Figure 1 (cartoon, helix red, strand yellow):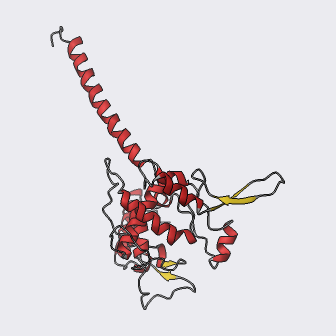
Figure 2 (cartoon, helix red, strand yellow):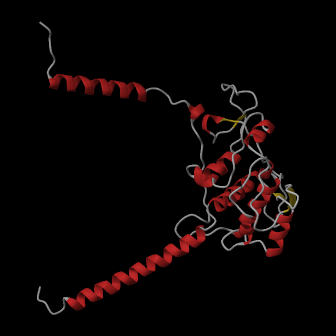
Length: 266
């Protein structure tokens, strides 16, 4: 005759198996090679009343223009956005000059041919490659992503970008990198196809800010956060006004309630 375990006995066996499994997992050391190191930074734009630092945004744009723009696009951003309130707030003349440096494809002309012309403030940023295949061919098969919304597409976006820029380290002895890869403590798996793009003195600052890797990393992170959410300051201001409105409305409703029910005994 088969020995059929009672439901209570089955439950006890299941609990015991779960406890043994949890204990075995807890006793197994984690694989450090797959862990990301994301450093938390203090940002001027954090919190409900946060605002962008204009100087930081301008420096961040300079880093993007001189370093990142060679491989990464900002296709959702237009040159005119650089002069709008809440952003780097470049002058109108500076925005026109920056736009004119770009070659924009336009057309067709009267003969049906496409042509290139200097950029205008209304034009979008020009991507460095014509298409994804061209981008991969120029980067050993790796596709440099567009950075328009990178700061919002990654968890803890600005912190992630900062940590990625500052996370290039010497490869540990126990890790073998694949061909063409670099070691980065912030990148998942720690192997990244992009070589270290920044180092001390890579970009010349004209406002007295020290040209260090740390400052470059912070500035480009702030700039990409603005690029991903150029209306952040406007949203913060609107939210503050809405909260004031709700407080006043709540006070008025309370006074109306007191007036309506004042004649009744409680």
